[in-house]
Length: 121
Image (tube, rainbow, N blue to C red; front, side, top):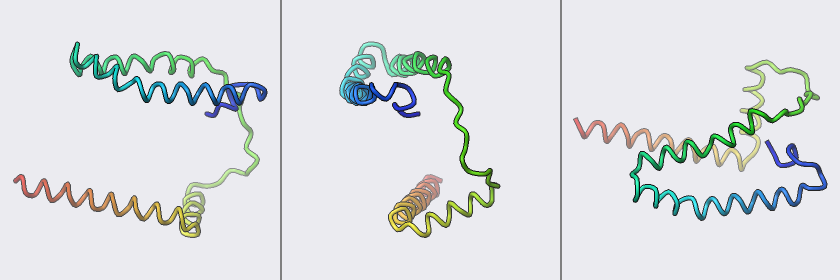
């Protein structure tokens, strides 16, 4: 969901600016407020407040009537889609590098976890 789907084109630049301000404000104030809640009421209360804070956004998404978008492409079968994705990754060097890093990181993290489990027993 993008800002362009939610506001008229004439208000798009203001919507993007407001989105950036609210994101940076939340990123700045959120941890401080969370720390105060943990200090005053404990970690459980902080998690509860965090969960409750998502309710207005979820309710607004529930009420939002999004215009259905008609696909300009024909439907594609699952295996053909997977094949297309793999071809894309193999042919795009930056994506291939990123996927290689993710694979290596996950493989090493998995081995580290198995190694830790082995040493605990």
